[in-house]
Image 1 (spheres, rainbow, N blue to C red):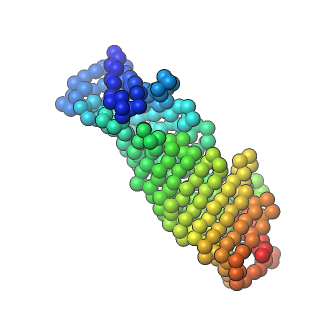
Image 2: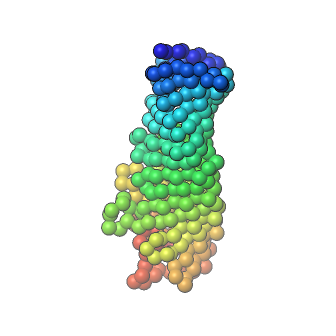
Image 3: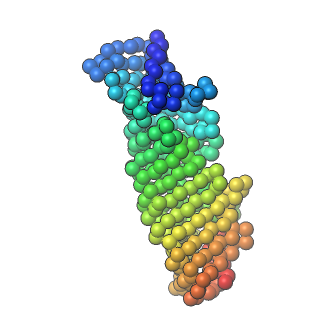
Length: 286
């Protein structure tokens, strides 16, 4: 049995919605209940842009409640979204997802997990105020609150950010794990391989415990090798290496030479001896 439902065309940008009941259709106190649910969205040109599937749907005058949500984004998005429960607002088309929410970017090898998520279809934006975790080839990022495009190419973590990043591709001999924390927000763009951390930023090298403190840290990754290409720290920059502390206005790290340069009224300039670090902590130059 197929039922074509045409919601408000102005809100849905002339997008035809097709609802399919694969097994049985029953009446419920709140409206109609469908088993085997499918919802498809199309662009003005007739191209399929997204679909939402579920094992069951309860349809009322205002909402569609879906069980076991499995959604896909097509075209430039190329992402999959799953959740235990979802509610579609029939008036504006927005979707609220809850319990075991997972977004997987099909072309970026990136996965995000959270407890709840709001999907604004017209703005092409997903948001949450809950804890989030994003895993990609560069490492793992956690925090509270997020806004992103469904394919996770561009995302912002709002606060309490913690990122564990690799200075080299995982498994290489010189790979070092750098843990960066910040109050947030933190923005990342996987298309340009760029990330920026804001407010009370602290980077710690796992193998030595050496630290970098600053107000803002920008990091660029090499598109091909995934290595850290460059990092720039600005605002109250402090480098802590054992008992020694260096202060400067700005720090630049070059990923190719692995040289750390302190710029702007440095109080202490030094290079450690045999116990020097690697990665972002290997050497200091004026």
